[in-house]
Image (cartoon, rainbow, N blue to C red; front, side, top):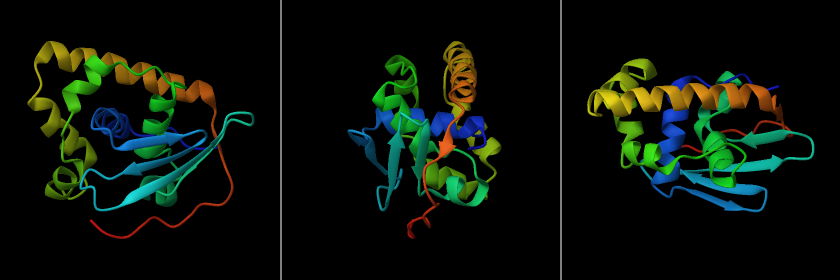
Length: 152
């Protein structure tokens, strides 16, 4: 079973969908990084409730990474709310994560500081709901993990 992603990865997934960086073709997907210099492959099998992505979080932490979450949002497995995704459009996550030495919580706070307080609260409630929805899916790993692509 996949571990539940850190909430920061949910925010990244929302921005990814809104930026159009996730492509879905049936039960396969391709997710471009925020730098757009590399992409991750996603494979999903809804019949057995399993998914695989070759991103760093999935590979190294056994947590569902943002590419898989973005795929599930784009495919409609998880409810996507475009008005909230719009708030995270264009966020250069890789650059911000690097700025904060991969302290993802600090990076998220930095991103959220730029968003209106009311919208931040809506995002918080929505991302908490998505975490619960992911927990209910009880997603398994689909096949062996694949090493993440290199690059920025």
